[in-house]
Length: 276
Length: 279
Image (cartoon, rainbow over all chains, first blue to last red; front, side):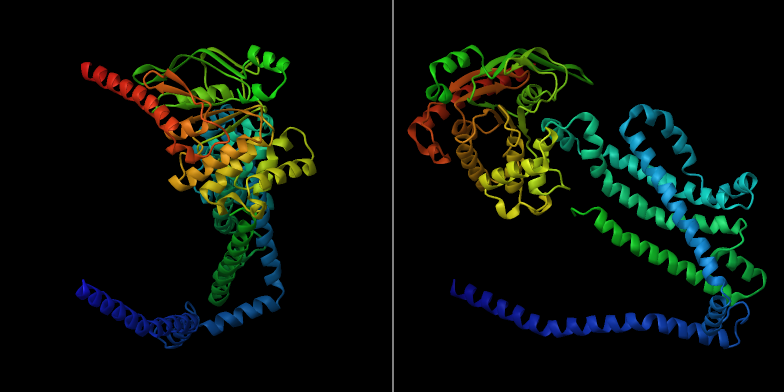
């Protein structure tokens, strides 16, 4: 008994000194990670600059970051950048809002009413897997180079994602909640607004968030199909003029836009599902 | 019974004439892959106004189905169910229900959850909130009035669910194993809470459980059901004095009641076992 006690005490001390020794080590490792993280981008940009200027690659095709930055500054100074940015943002936001609204509307209809689901779901399930980019040729036939065609593509891409997640969300609403609501005197015609919509909201929000990035890649298809302004349109023009710096600047701008949009939506999503 | 003792002779007469719940020849048949399954077979019982009846039986004996049918939630059935003298076709606000899971609306605070029923019955937000706040005080969750359900423990959530069912002042309160998902300690506390609550509300209560102790502690009368098909085996009147608490479980009168119940259950279990053996 006494021996056992002694042994367990020894073990406890061992663990404690071990812990004391390990803690500063952990702190040091965490600091190192932060430092490395902060150095990551400068390191790779520096490497890129060195490789580009080393003469082993063609500088016209693979310009260094300094050349890219100059091209972007020129783009901004010429006044074209903000026109392009606005054109692209307009297409993405309008397409996202219209496609999202239609997706939610039809998702509720097919999720809630089996007859509407029987009518529309087979059609939607056939159309949904076709990549939106594949619609570019027919969109050009239908809409020419008009703005409507570009909106159509973004709406198309956003719609199916939001429709499907809303449909599933409505179907997955806890039956127990509906029974509880019924027992409390909730009329069936108010069930949609009182229970179903809020029950499906977490799914709808996930669908909308996925649709944010989808709206950006359908934007690329839409602007490549022919436009008169827009970030991707400018990338294409720059490519034809062999202005590789502007091409890369355009790519960076597109990435930044998409990143900011996603972060903004994530922040919004947290407020939308307020009870979590 | 309790109500009758405190009321005038006229209402005693009325109460005797009209039970709060009348179930006669209730049969429920489900379609399954192996053909029709008789879940409940010609069950009949009455519940007097203000009475607390427990339906006890093994899982799968159809006791929850009977309760859901009284609530107006279930499926087609044969027989007659009258609640307050009127046949039941759909849920009605004077019949409240507490489920095994709390089923609280996750997007509503405790207060809004409890106020939901009165709001649906046309009360103003102020009136509904006042009703809710009274009930929140009664269940001792005043500090949590603005909390969301996900932040509450299981026992607290079930207390909110009970308060929510009481907010419409139901004449009949149906409880479907409401404490079944709670741990033993919380469960005993909840039983005592319910007994105290019961002395303050006037509702008729039908409480379904598979726990014979719970049934005897709570009820004025226990209906013991058997499984396959669901039938009522025995009615046991519980004449233990009220106010009651779970400490009644050590009294000799309690123990002899429990022995009676267990004898019925054991005999039935043996019969079912021999029958399945013979098949």
